[in-house]
Length: 361
Image 1 (cartoon, rainbow, N blue to C red):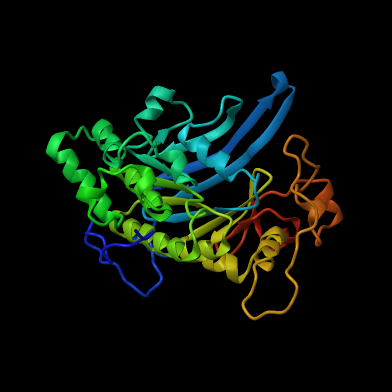
Image 2 (image 1 turned 60 degrees about the vertical axis):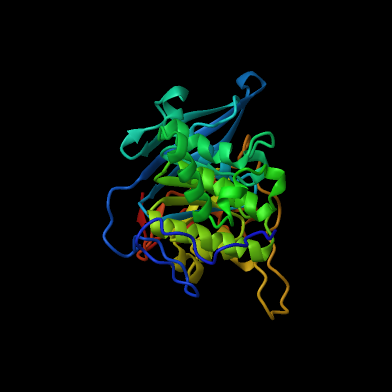
């Protein structure tokens, strides 16, 4: 029972064929005409309040980005930078101590931050789906695969009987589960790690969402299975046109999967750029440090290391939050927080070194 065994190609979910051996591209060309964003996040601020509100942790602090149909946005950064909290803020799944204190999340023209949990339940699963890091945290060991994949289609698409069974089989075939008519009777413990992750993908697609948030979905997979799973996600995206937010620490995955990249540090997006521009010409010292710390095949040079630790989000330093660890910091970095500087290549970065020759916002 292999991790990603089965048919070499899923049944068509649309008209666009897969292109084996070539880098995957989104259904919408990033250089082509742009429609209205599927998701528009503006100045989002999510804080954690502890000890009766006397201690405030600014987990997300002024995050803004837009995502269009068929586009993939990568969220990268060190642990604790605010990536997962940003995603949980979008779908309203924050823990009790957290609260959105400002900003806007507009999804398909609707403001999500003003919706009640009852209203958000009609959005989650049907229009926005989430793929979590650990499939065993998403799958109930007491229920069969059929029951868990069928649930979103049952509640959101109101499918019943044979139609529901046919929908589940179709979804399992789409994520390359062999013999779906038999495997849907199994329980999660009877599946390999790669197959469980694909089952979670089938659950995410069951409601027919227009946005999928994948929070480090390949962390627990080995390299071979990881590559096959990423190819599967791109094939499904190409065929359905779903927009994708991909959270990861792996810059190699970013290069393979994403159209644009947002680099997060201390709850802020400090650089945002098309993926090619970010790898060719990173603007922020933190982004350059992240790229410099990636091992290079055949290189004998010591890896670049970022000194120090990420800041305490409950007591951020004045000025740029990265300046205590930055080798390029100037005096102004320690006293004033930089705004967004817009570059000619379409990238945006928060760094005082970019002040001259850039548009400010």
